[in-house]
Length: 517
Ligand SMILES: Nc1nc2c(c(=O)[nH]1)N[C@H]1C(S)=C(S)[C@@H](COP(=O)(O)O)O[C@H]1N2
Ligand SMILES: [Mo]
Image (cartoon, rainbow, N blue to C red; front, side, top):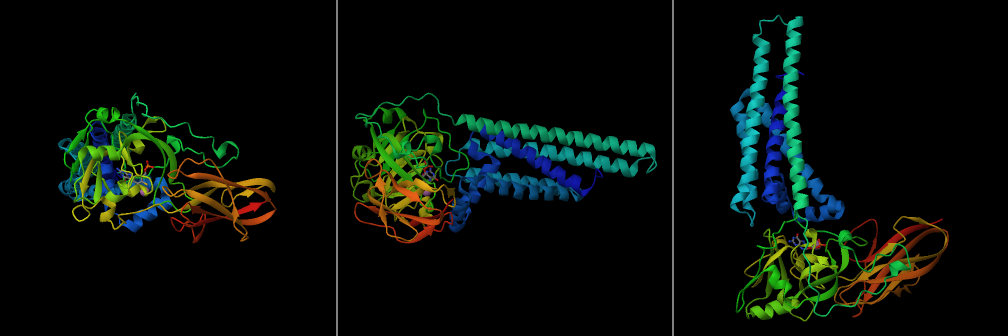
């Protein structure tokens, strides 16, 4: 590699951009992670991604959608950074200008977020200073190496010239290596700070005014493979638009209730904690859950009934929408008649006996039984506004999604697994079924296109909670098609058949292929 070759200049662009981005990331980790240059660009890409692509990504990539997105952003940035380096071979100023443009873009994107504050320019500023400084040094070093080669009195190809070139190359590589190592260390430290910073300390939750009895024993105790009656916090699915989980300082956090109300309310975390709390068992699910998918979970939530808060604020007559805002500015809208029809809507602060985990909305979130998460489960909640659909549109509403989204009846086969091979003989087919707020009356299983057989149901935890089910099966050898469907208390039943693992929809009869050996 010639010190002044194209590769060296491209590498200088990459190195300096990497150093800038890493330094910016570290500063962001210490102030506001969402303002990190990479994350600011990534979040913008998420917001601008056309809805069908986003739906595809959630479905096909699952929780890997974010790493994939970040990797793409990184690759795009690296390409531009390499380009800036190449430009610098002709004109250092031009290269620097492109780099500055890149960083400025990240800075603008960080500031355009609804929740941005003045400190959020800091990461981009630091990235600019560090990036340009490394760039200037690198270009200077490459120039000097190039000049040395052309003007050296040493005879080209002579032993002295070879030694000098080697020494200069070694110096350059050493410098580049040092900068790369420092950058990696800065980025890693930033990641570490972000991860440890979101841990929730030793908050002790008060008990509910009338604690619920413990959950009954679930079918999972008797039959391997059926989803536990309660999903643990660690295993609960996570779906949101956030690249980094918002880190909320609980002391300065407030919940504001405003809009069409008699009296605006501003509540602290302690205010919420000292109100009469209730416990509710509610299953949560995502509209992007494919048939047989895992974006569904069931938990015991602790919180303040939304009704109590709305009664205290006094809802006016004009509002038809409850617009909730998260600390990062993300919004969700819920039909007001849904939240006021008597169902147990909660502003939850606890999940399965613990403070809400950061991933699931610490310090407070909305939980609305009977509607998909994107219309009723706002995490990192900070504001509830009584307004109208005509006046305000939430994040997903702007992207063409429905404003009301009642959960469709669904049943999932947990065991046997799709496409698995099991031993012939006595076994069970089992899983869970849900239709939040309508309840499950019956679950039916069909084997090889035969008659629908009624499965046995697990314990009843209420209409808002999923229901476990199983059907004993004396499995004969061969390949079999096993299908499941559920019927709600009000007689609604699934129709379209969806064979998994070939997802093609968010509701329908799940059918799996099983080989019995
Ligand atoms: N602030 C915020 N809240 C949000 C979302 C989000 O992107 N941001 N996503 C919603 C969606 S689409 C779903 S399905 C649920 C998922 O909740 P969970 O991650 O706790 O399972 O959160 C909802 N609340
Ligand atoms: Mo969702």
